[in-house]
Amino acid sequence: MEKRMKALVTGASSGFGKAIAENLAKNNYDLILCGRRTSRLEELSESLTKGYNINCQILSFDVRDKEAVEAASKEVSQNELDVLVNNAGLAVGLSNIDNGEIDDWERMLDTNVKGLLYVSRFFLPSLKNGGHVINIGSIAGKEVYPGGNVYCASKHAVDALSKAMRIELLEREIKVSQVCPGMAETEFSLVRFKGDEKRADNVYKGIDALMAIDIAEAVDFILSRPKHVCINDLIIMPSAQATASISKRRSE
Ligand code: NDP
Ligand code: 8X3
Image (cartoon, rainbow, N blue to C red; front, side):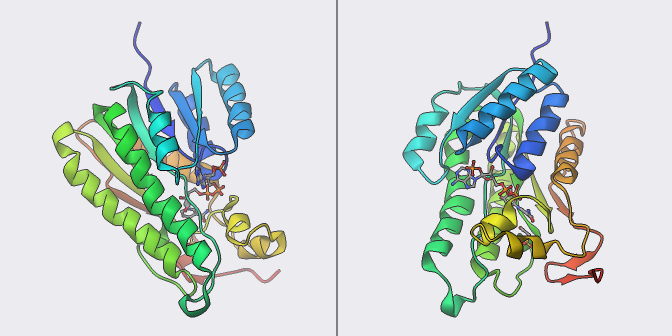
Protein backbone atom coordinates (compact mmCIF):
# COMPACT_ATOMS: atom_id res chain seq x y z
CA MET A 1 0.00 0.00 0.00
CA GLU A 2 1.32 3.48 -0.88
CA LYS A 3 2.34 5.50 2.19
CA ARG A 4 0.39 8.73 2.61
CA MET A 5 2.11 12.10 2.84
CA LYS A 6 2.16 13.87 6.22
CA ALA A 7 2.11 17.62 6.92
CA LEU A 8 2.53 19.62 10.13
CA VAL A 9 0.64 22.92 10.21
CA THR A 10 1.18 25.54 12.92
CA GLY A 11 -1.71 27.86 13.75
CA ALA A 12 -4.23 25.24 12.57
CA SER A 13 -6.90 26.40 15.03
CA SER A 14 -8.00 29.36 12.90
CA GLY A 15 -7.78 31.29 9.63
CA PHE A 16 -5.19 30.26 7.04
CA GLY A 17 -3.82 27.33 9.06
CA LYS A 18 -7.25 25.76 9.47
CA ALA A 19 -8.08 26.19 5.77
CA ILE A 20 -4.66 24.81 4.75
CA ALA A 21 -5.19 21.78 7.00
CA GLU A 22 -8.67 21.20 5.53
CA ASN A 23 -7.35 21.29 1.96
CA LEU A 24 -4.43 19.03 2.81
CA ALA A 25 -6.87 16.55 4.33
CA LYS A 26 -8.96 16.68 1.13
CA ASN A 27 -5.75 15.90 -0.75
CA ASN A 28 -5.27 12.82 1.44
CA TYR A 29 -2.45 14.07 3.67
CA ASP A 30 -2.18 12.85 7.24
CA LEU A 31 -1.83 15.83 9.54
CA ILE A 32 -0.21 17.15 12.68
CA LEU A 33 -2.30 20.09 13.86
CA CYS A 34 -0.61 22.68 16.10
CA GLY A 35 -1.86 25.66 18.07
CA ARG A 36 -2.64 26.66 21.65
CA ARG A 37 -6.44 26.27 21.58
CA THR A 38 -6.62 22.52 22.02
CA SER A 39 -10.42 22.26 21.90
CA ARG A 40 -10.48 23.85 18.45
CA LEU A 41 -7.76 21.50 17.25
CA GLU A 42 -9.74 18.55 18.61
CA GLU A 43 -12.87 19.69 16.79
CA LEU A 44 -10.94 20.09 13.54
CA SER A 45 -9.19 16.77 13.97
CA GLU A 46 -12.50 14.99 14.51
CA SER A 47 -14.12 16.52 11.44
CA LEU A 48 -11.10 15.85 9.18
CA THR A 49 -10.60 12.30 10.42
CA LYS A 50 -14.25 11.47 9.81
CA GLY A 51 -14.63 13.51 6.61
CA TYR A 52 -11.53 12.35 4.77
CA ASN A 53 -10.47 9.14 6.49
CA ILE A 54 -7.02 10.50 7.31
CA ASN A 55 -4.95 10.37 10.53
CA CYS A 56 -4.64 13.51 12.64
CA GLN A 57 -2.34 14.12 15.58
CA ILE A 58 -2.64 17.19 17.80
CA LEU A 59 0.39 18.94 19.24
CA SER A 60 -0.75 21.79 21.43
CA PHE A 61 2.00 24.25 22.34
CA ASP A 62 2.90 27.93 22.35
CA VAL A 63 5.50 28.58 19.64
CA ARG A 64 7.13 31.17 21.95
CA ASP A 65 7.94 28.49 24.53
CA LYS A 66 11.23 26.94 23.40
CA GLU A 67 11.03 24.02 25.85
CA ALA A 68 7.43 23.26 24.84
CA VAL A 69 8.33 23.29 21.14
CA GLU A 70 11.26 20.98 21.76
CA ALA A 71 9.12 18.61 23.87
CA ALA A 72 6.42 18.51 21.15
CA SER A 73 9.02 17.77 18.48
CA LYS A 74 9.96 14.59 20.36
CA GLU A 75 6.47 13.24 19.49
CA VAL A 76 7.46 13.22 15.81
CA SER A 77 10.01 10.77 14.41
CA GLN A 78 12.88 11.52 12.08
CA ASN A 79 11.78 11.51 8.41
CA GLU A 80 8.10 11.44 9.41
CA LEU A 81 7.10 14.72 7.73
CA ASP A 82 6.78 15.58 4.04
CA VAL A 83 5.61 19.17 4.59
CA LEU A 84 6.11 21.78 7.32
CA VAL A 85 3.80 24.81 7.20
CA ASN A 86 5.05 27.67 9.41
CA ASN A 87 1.85 29.69 9.63
CA ALA A 88 1.31 30.64 13.32
CA GLY A 89 1.65 34.38 13.76
CA LEU A 90 -0.04 37.61 14.68
CA ALA A 91 -0.03 41.38 14.69
CA VAL A 92 -0.73 43.27 17.90
CA GLY A 93 -1.55 46.98 17.84
CA LEU A 94 -1.07 49.65 15.19
CA SER A 95 0.76 52.36 17.16
CA ASN A 96 3.72 54.38 16.05
CA ILE A 97 7.18 53.52 17.38
CA ASP A 98 7.31 56.59 19.61
CA ASN A 99 4.19 55.57 21.51
CA GLY A 100 3.99 51.81 20.91
CA GLU A 101 3.35 49.14 23.54
CA ILE A 102 6.58 47.28 24.18
CA ASP A 103 4.66 44.16 25.28
CA ASP A 104 2.95 44.12 21.86
CA TRP A 105 6.30 44.32 20.09
CA GLU A 106 7.62 41.43 22.16
CA ARG A 107 4.57 39.28 21.41
CA MET A 108 5.03 39.84 17.67
CA LEU A 109 8.76 39.24 17.60
CA ASP A 110 8.56 36.25 19.96
CA THR A 111 5.77 34.63 17.91
CA ASN A 112 6.52 35.55 14.30
CA VAL A 113 10.31 35.41 14.38
CA LYS A 114 11.51 33.38 17.36
CA GLY A 115 8.49 31.04 17.26
CA LEU A 116 9.06 30.28 13.58
CA LEU A 117 12.72 29.67 14.35
CA TYR A 118 12.00 27.33 17.28
CA VAL A 119 9.50 25.32 15.22
CA SER A 120 11.95 25.12 12.31
CA ARG A 121 14.91 24.18 14.50
CA PHE A 122 13.09 21.41 16.32
CA PHE A 123 10.88 19.99 13.54
CA LEU A 124 13.20 20.26 10.50
CA PRO A 125 15.05 17.11 11.58
CA SER A 126 11.71 15.29 11.17
CA LEU A 127 11.25 16.59 7.62
CA LYS A 128 12.31 14.11 4.97
CA ASN A 129 15.03 15.01 2.51
CA GLY A 130 13.10 16.12 -0.58
CA GLY A 131 10.35 17.60 1.64
CA HIS A 132 8.82 21.08 1.53
CA VAL A 133 8.71 24.04 3.94
CA ILE A 134 6.01 26.66 3.43
CA ASN A 135 6.42 29.87 5.41
CA ILE A 136 3.47 32.24 5.65
CA GLY A 137 4.96 35.71 5.30
CA SER A 138 2.97 38.79 4.37
CA ILE A 139 2.85 41.83 2.13
CA ALA A 140 4.10 43.38 5.40
CA GLY A 141 7.32 41.46 4.76
CA LYS A 142 7.78 43.26 1.46
CA GLU A 143 6.56 46.77 2.33
CA VAL A 144 6.15 48.97 5.40
CA TYR A 145 3.01 50.92 6.27
CA PRO A 146 2.13 53.48 8.97
CA GLY A 147 1.74 51.76 12.33
CA GLY A 148 2.99 48.46 10.86
CA ASN A 149 6.56 48.99 12.13
CA VAL A 150 7.32 45.94 14.31
CA TYR A 151 4.84 43.61 12.57
CA CYS A 152 6.46 44.58 9.24
CA ALA A 153 9.92 44.01 10.73
CA SER A 154 8.85 40.56 11.93
CA LYS A 155 7.54 39.62 8.48
CA HIS A 156 10.64 41.06 6.78
CA ALA A 157 12.52 38.64 9.05
CA VAL A 158 10.33 35.78 7.77
CA ASP A 159 11.24 36.88 4.23
CA ALA A 160 14.97 36.75 5.10
CA LEU A 161 14.66 33.43 6.95
CA SER A 162 12.80 31.90 3.99
CA LYS A 163 15.71 32.85 1.72
CA ALA A 164 18.23 31.52 4.27
CA MET A 165 16.36 28.22 4.59
CA ARG A 166 16.27 27.85 0.79
CA ILE A 167 20.06 28.07 0.72
CA GLU A 168 20.74 25.92 3.75
CA LEU A 169 18.23 23.17 3.00
CA LEU A 170 19.24 22.84 -0.66
CA GLU A 171 21.69 20.05 0.18
CA ARG A 172 18.72 18.06 1.61
CA GLU A 173 16.68 18.86 -1.56
CA ILE A 174 14.04 20.50 0.63
CA LYS A 175 11.99 23.12 -1.23
CA VAL A 176 11.25 26.36 0.63
CA SER A 177 8.29 28.51 -0.43
CA GLN A 178 7.00 31.71 1.06
CA VAL A 179 3.38 32.86 0.66
CA CYS A 180 2.82 36.58 1.23
CA PRO A 181 -0.84 37.54 1.48
CA GLY A 182 -2.32 41.01 1.60
CA MET A 183 -5.45 41.83 3.59
CA ALA A 184 -7.34 38.65 4.49
CA GLU A 185 -10.47 38.23 6.59
CA THR A 186 -9.58 35.85 9.43
CA GLU A 187 -9.25 36.42 13.19
CA PHE A 188 -6.11 38.45 12.42
CA SER A 189 -7.64 41.92 12.99
CA LEU A 190 -9.58 40.79 16.05
CA VAL A 191 -6.26 39.71 17.55
CA ARG A 192 -4.50 42.88 16.34
CA PHE A 193 -7.13 45.06 18.04
CA LYS A 194 -7.28 42.89 21.17
CA GLY A 195 -10.88 41.72 20.76
CA ASP A 196 -12.35 45.05 19.57
CA GLU A 197 -14.83 43.62 17.03
CA LYS A 198 -15.94 46.98 15.67
CA ARG A 199 -12.40 48.06 14.88
CA ALA A 200 -11.62 44.66 13.39
CA ASP A 201 -14.74 44.71 11.17
CA ASN A 202 -13.84 48.19 9.90
CA VAL A 203 -10.63 46.82 8.38
CA TYR A 204 -12.72 44.83 5.87
CA LYS A 205 -15.47 47.45 5.28
CA GLY A 206 -16.13 48.10 1.58
CA ILE A 207 -13.46 45.72 0.33
CA ASP A 208 -13.52 42.12 -0.80
CA ALA A 209 -10.58 40.94 1.27
CA LEU A 210 -8.86 37.62 0.65
CA MET A 211 -10.41 34.62 2.37
CA ALA A 212 -8.48 31.82 4.09
CA ILE A 213 -9.42 29.43 1.28
CA ASP A 214 -7.55 31.64 -1.22
CA ILE A 215 -4.33 31.01 0.67
CA ALA A 216 -5.07 27.30 1.13
CA GLU A 217 -5.57 26.96 -2.64
CA ALA A 218 -2.23 28.69 -3.25
CA VAL A 219 -0.59 26.17 -0.92
CA ASP A 220 -2.26 23.34 -2.89
CA PHE A 221 -0.80 24.80 -6.08
CA ILE A 222 2.68 25.11 -4.57
CA LEU A 223 2.63 21.53 -3.30
CA SER A 224 1.28 20.12 -6.55
CA ARG A 225 4.22 21.34 -8.69
CA PRO A 226 6.54 18.66 -10.06
CA LYS A 227 9.74 17.84 -8.17
CA HIS A 228 11.91 20.07 -10.37
CA VAL A 229 9.78 23.21 -9.77
CA CYS A 230 9.81 25.34 -6.62
CA ILE A 231 7.54 28.36 -6.20
CA ASN A 232 9.93 30.46 -4.11
CA ASP A 233 7.71 33.42 -3.32
CA LEU A 234 4.08 34.19 -3.93
CA ILE A 235 2.46 37.58 -3.23
CA ILE A 236 -1.33 37.34 -3.18
CA MET A 237 -3.41 40.49 -2.81
CA PRO A 238 -7.11 41.30 -2.91
CA SER A 239 -7.84 42.81 -6.34
CA ALA A 240 -8.84 46.02 -4.56
CA GLN A 241 -5.53 46.38 -2.67
CA ALA A 242 -2.64 47.78 -4.72
CA THR A 243 -0.05 48.04 -1.92
CA ALA A 244 -0.04 47.39 1.81
CA SER A 245 -1.54 50.83 2.41
CA ILE A 246 -3.44 51.70 -0.82
CA SER A 247 -6.83 50.09 -1.34
CA LYS A 248 -10.02 50.98 -3.18
CA ARG A 249 -13.07 50.75 -0.95
CA ARG A 250 -16.75 50.84 -1.89
CA SER A 251 -18.69 53.49 -0.02
CA GLU A 252 -21.25 51.60 2.11
P1 NDP B 1 -5.66 33.97 12.81
O1 NDP B 1 -5.61 34.85 14.00
O2 NDP B 1 -6.99 33.56 12.28
O3 NDP B 1 -4.77 32.67 13.07
C1 NDP B 1 -3.53 32.73 13.72
C2 NDP B 1 -3.11 31.35 14.14
O4 NDP B 1 -1.80 31.44 14.75
C3 NDP B 1 -4.04 30.72 15.15
O5 NDP B 1 -4.29 29.39 14.78
C4 NDP B 1 -3.27 30.79 16.45
O6 NDP B 1 -3.56 29.64 17.24
C5 NDP B 1 -1.82 30.72 15.97
N1 NDP B 1 -0.93 31.32 16.95
C6 NDP B 1 -0.83 32.65 17.28
N2 NDP B 1 0.04 32.82 18.27
C7 NDP B 1 0.51 31.58 18.59
C8 NDP B 1 1.43 31.11 19.56
N3 NDP B 1 2.06 31.93 20.42
N4 NDP B 1 1.67 29.77 19.62
C9 NDP B 1 1.05 28.93 18.77
N5 NDP B 1 0.18 29.32 17.83
C10 NDP B 1 -0.09 30.63 17.75
O7 NDP B 1 -4.84 34.76 11.68
P2 NDP B 1 -4.40 34.36 10.18
O8 NDP B 1 -4.88 33.03 9.80
O9 NDP B 1 -4.75 35.52 9.33
O10 NDP B 1 -2.83 34.36 10.37
C11 NDP B 1 -1.99 33.29 9.99
C12 NDP B 1 -0.66 33.83 9.49
O11 NDP B 1 -0.90 34.64 8.33
C13 NDP B 1 0.05 34.75 10.49
O12 NDP B 1 1.43 34.44 10.43
C14 NDP B 1 -0.21 36.16 9.94
O13 NDP B 1 0.80 37.05 10.30
C15 NDP B 1 -0.23 35.88 8.46
N6 NDP B 1 -0.90 36.85 7.61
C16 NDP B 1 -2.20 37.23 7.83
C17 NDP B 1 -2.83 38.11 6.97
C18 NDP B 1 -4.22 38.60 7.19
O14 NDP B 1 -4.56 39.72 6.71
N7 NDP B 1 -5.09 37.84 7.83
C19 NDP B 1 -2.13 38.61 5.77
C20 NDP B 1 -0.78 38.17 5.65
C21 NDP B 1 -0.21 37.29 6.51
P3 NDP B 1 -3.88 29.66 18.83
O15 NDP B 1 -4.43 31.01 19.16
O16 NDP B 1 -4.84 28.53 19.01
O17 NDP B 1 -2.56 29.39 19.42
C1 8X3 C 1 -1.27 41.05 7.31
C2 8X3 C 1 -1.48 41.99 6.18
O1 8X3 C 1 -1.41 44.41 5.49
O2 8X3 C 1 -2.42 43.89 7.65
O3 8X3 C 1 -0.02 40.45 7.26
O4 8X3 C 1 -0.06 43.79 7.37
S1 8X3 C 1 -1.32 43.58 6.71
